[in-house]
Structures are given as C-alpha cells and as structure tokens.
Amino acid sequence: MNLQLSPLIELQKLDLRIADLKEQRRKIPERLEENEAPLREAKRLFQEASASVESLVKDRRGHEKDLEAHEDRIGKMKDRAAQLKTNQEYQAHLFEVELANKKRGEIEEKILLAMEQIEQTQRTIVEVQAKLKESEALFVKEKAKLDEKDQVLASELAELEVKQKQLSGQVDKSLLARYNKLKTTRKEQALALIKDGICVGCRLQLPPQLVSQVKRGDDVHTCPYCYRMLYWEGDPATEVKGAVEHDQAKNLEVGESF
Image (cartoon, rainbow, N blue to C red; front, top):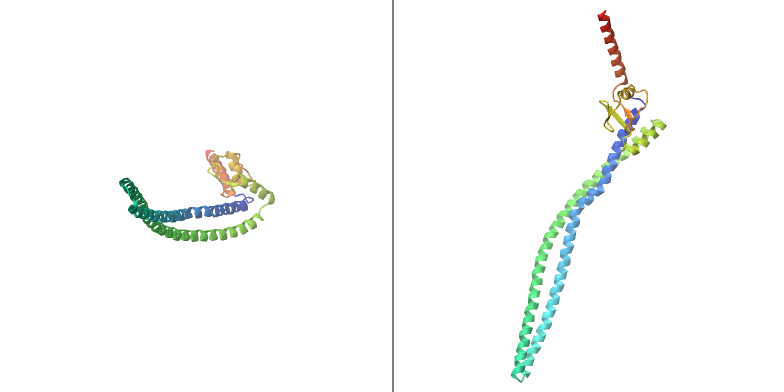
C-alpha cells in the first residue's frame, strides 16, 4: 500500500461513515413525519366528526324551534274554527289544517333524521377517539425511539469529526486539498481500491501497466476514467518478490537445459 495514501484511506473511511451518519440523521425528520401521518389522520377524522355533530345538533334545534312555532300556528288556526260562519270558510279551514299537519310531519321527520345522524356520528366519534388514542401512543413510542437514535448518531458523529480533524492534520496539505476536491465531486469517495485489475470506484478495467504502478506504491496514480486516486491493499514488496522468484525459476530452467 502507498504510504502517502495510507492516512487518506483511513480518512476516507471516516468521511464515508460521517456522511452515512449525517444521511441517517437527515432522514429522521422524514421518518418522524411518516410515523405521525396516522395520528394526523385520526385527529382530522375526530375534528370532522365533532364538527359534524355540532352542525347536526344545531340543525335539530332549528327544526325543533320550527316545530314549536308551527304548533303555535296550528293552535291559533284551531281557535279560529269557532269563528267560521259558512261551510266554504270551514272547508278552507280544514284544508289549511291538513296542510299544516303535513308540514308538521315533515318537520318532525327532519328532527328524527337529525337525531339518527347525531347518534350515528357520536358512535363514529367513539371509534375515532379509540383510534386517536392508539395512534398517539404509537407515535409517542416511535418518536422516543427516533429521538434516542438521533442522540446516538449525533454522539458518534461528534467523535468521528474530532478524529477526522486529527487525521486530516497527518496528511500532506496538497494531497489533502486534492482529496477534498475529488471528494466533493465523487460522492465522498476520492480514493478507489484496485481489485482484480478493476477500479472499484467506476467498475472499469484498468490498464495492466497502471495497475503495476499502483501496486509498486512509489507514486500517487489516478483512474483514467473516474479520476479517483487509486490504491492497492497488498504489500508493494509482493509484486517485486514475485518477479524475482519468476526470474530465478526461469534461470533454473535455462541452467537445466545446459
């Protein structure tokens, strides 16, 4: 592994973890809002049902007043019956009474309908209240969990940011500046591992010569496709040792041929 990149590799691990923690914290308000949705809906239904009952009660009282006024009119109409002199007046009076009785029946029907609707809506309110209570308890529980998680994430984040600052001080300034610039354009990943001749950052095959140069670890090399700084996790001496063993084996074969 390139010694220049060694602290940067550790720094990138920290940065990626920090980015992950920040993303988790960013999503907490969204999750809180999602968990609150059933509670908001239950509150809305409760408010609607309560408002509906108030409106129905108001309508019923209005109909009851109408009925009371109508009963007074019917009473006065009946009182006038004794004052009627002709059969024609009496027949007209009976017709008025009939219409009045019909109107009274319509008003009474409205009162009964309002009472039925009030009773039905009150049953709905009881159901909604139970759902509201359940939703409130569930939301309080989930909120407590998310608050606790946020505190844990914030604590770890604070610790890692201290380590990040300390580790950044161990990196060459020019190399750190290069790293930070790449990090902003490469989703927090300025360095990429070489695995099986492939840049893990962009998943593209690298030229064999470049892979060999990175393995030697004598300089900082970048991927020609994604421009990330490349590193190899093996020991730089491994490649050299392999080459020496290969040459020795070749010499033995040549010697044996003589």
